Image 1 (tube, rainbow, N blue to C red):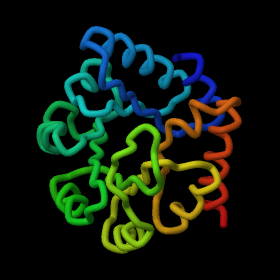
Image 2: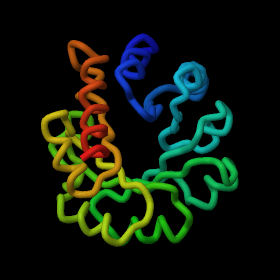
Image 3: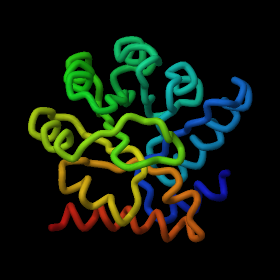
Image 4: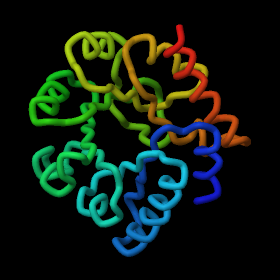
Length: 191
C-alpha cells in the first residue's frame, strides 16, 4: 500500500484520503499513522474518511464525513479550528448549503460517472456542480468514476478537486496516472 501511495504522491497527488471500511481499529490506526508519516514527507494533507477520532489520533489534517459519520461541530471539536472538515453531499445542494453553514471547509458531490468502488452511488450532474460553484464559497470536490479523460469537464463545471481511487491505484503506471490528474488541475489553473 505505501509503495503505491508514494508513487501517487510522486506523480503529484495533492491530497490523500485514508479510507478503509473493513479493517479493525488497530489496523486502521496503524495504516493511517503510516500514511500520515508519508504525507508529511511530501507536505501533502491527509484526510481520514468517516472517523474524526482516528484523524485526531494520527494527527491527520482533517476528516471527511459521510451522511452517517457525525456532525461538522463534533469533528471541529475534535480537530480544532485548523482541522479540515469535508462533507459528502451526494447529489443534493441543500446538504452542501447546510454543511457550509455548519462550518465545513469543503463539500463533495458525486457520483458523476459509474464507479466500481461504489456501484450503487447516487448520480450527480454537471449542472449541480455549476450551481454549487455559483452559490458556495468553499472548495468543491467531485467524486465517482472519474478518469483523466472525463475529469476536465468536472473542473470546467466548477469542481476544485477530483477524488479518484481506481483511475490512479489500478493504473499500470500509478505515478503517471497521478501526473495526468495533476496536469488537468494545472492546465485549468493556467488557462
